[in-house]
Image (cartoon, rainbow, N blue to C red; front, side, top):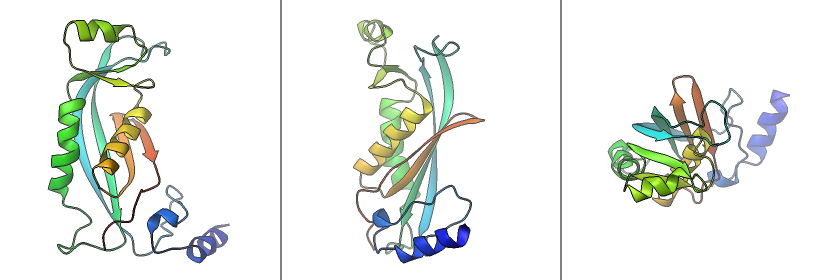
Amino acid sequence: GRDKILSFAFTFKKKCHKRRPSFWGLGFNVIAGMYEIIKILEFSYGHRLLDHPKCQNLHGHNGKAEIVLFADSLDQNGMVSDFSQVRTVVGGWINSHLDHQMLLSQNDPLLKVCRDYQMPVYVFDSPPTAEAIAKTLFDITQQNGFSVKEVRFWETSSSVGIYRGEPSSCPPA
């Protein structure tokens, strides 16, 4: 059981986090010496899910994103990353692309109407679910040079979508 998992985790521990096995969510931390921070960013948006009986109508949410960053060691300022930089970069992207906008799938017939009336809209390749929003925010965070472990996106106070991906590079030591 648990001893086997811990033994496996420490046997294959590498210098770079991306090569370590992922044991997030098991209720214990098997990666010794890793730092994490969470930056919470909130925004409002509207969306609909075409193939969902309840959510096929336009409706809105006040969502909350938890951006989880990691590092094996702290930077020269004693931080994983500066919270204000995450707010400026990722929060700025959210404010420009998602906040107070309609989030629609590329095949939603309302997309044309929104564009015809110059309504702010962000287009997803898939249905704009909490999971899709979490993945989008993960990708944006990673593309902006942050060492992101996961993004949790709370659509409501009791419903969260999570995306965990492989970090593209190790954080600076």
